[in-house]
Image (cartoon, rainbow, N blue to C red; front, side):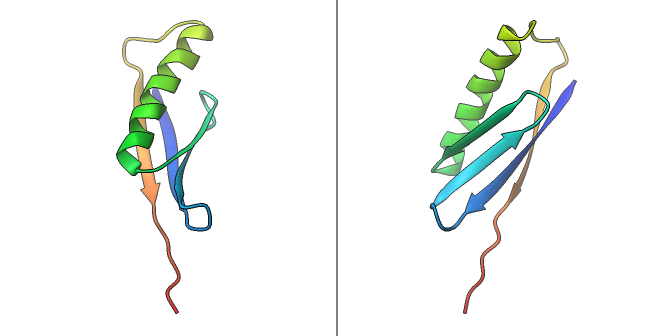
Length: 70
């Protein structure tokens, strides 16, 4: 099963935000690579608690960084 993780930059807070509705999961962190590691660990723990992890379980990340420059 593939779990889609949406990652967005929160310019006001200065952190990356990751959300996955199918796990469910919501985390904030900076820098980006640290967030990815936190998501992997948390997703694994949540899936194990909720009945285990299927062999073909994958996390698919979609990252967006939008910024308005005046």
